[in-house]
Length: 225
Image (cartoon, rainbow, N blue to C red; front, side, top):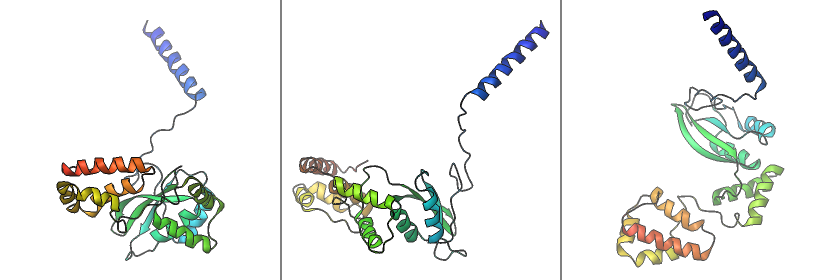
């Protein structure tokens, strides 16, 4: 009985191995790197040219990459953030999340621009300069053309440091003293969440409704989630 059970177990194991070989393999979750990120280690590139060469090869296939960028007083320099962003825009990519790395570096995420993603006024200005310098690639220009065609280019939003309270929102706040006091006491980042939502709203009726909702929320001393 024990001998038959052993043979049966062996046959079952062989069948399982055959099924595994004949079935498409599912990649395992990549282990975290030393930076604490899953997947490939961040790229460390010495200069703008190296980043441009990498994107020339990979911009159409890669889902995104983390760049390790040296701080100003680092012993070994790398491509800078501003240089990396310029090149990314040329290829239709955009910057994303930033994380700490070590005493001399931070890591910055760069990915292909998502469909229908909004543009910042800062990047609109950068693209104008890159276009004048003849640096835009067909991939980058395609993203600009798409934004121009659907109106996103004209609706580009301001950065937190430059965004002002629009007149219609200011008027609504003046009509509710509690909401205005609470909003005026918020930090720049907390204020920006409200202002960005208003500035990037396309339809006038939706904008008016949102402003009313935001004033009501602020009057209750609540923030947007």
